[in-house]
Image 1 (cartoon, rainbow, N blue to C red):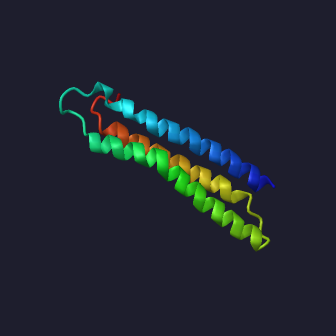
Image 2 (spheres, rainbow, N blue to C red):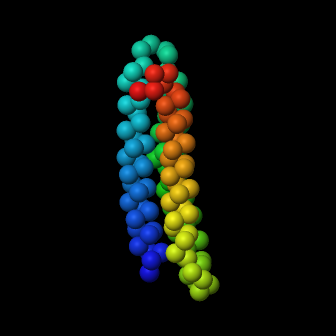
Length: 103
């Protein structure tokens, strides 16, 4: 039961990460001319918005498999959420690397 609650909370966190990923488009607001790498900013946006959901899906599948095998699975959503947070952080860093001023 705890794993189900954690998976729901994890999905909410993924929704927040997706919103942050979309808002990373505003990193390019400080770009004037050609001093920004828009490809890098777009890659960071994509990583931040999509990769946490992919990790959530993998975590969901693993949790179901562990439940089917009658093993305790409460820790799987926690590990998945940490991995998704790290992935979102890497995506944010990639997006900020595309803008020299950072904002």
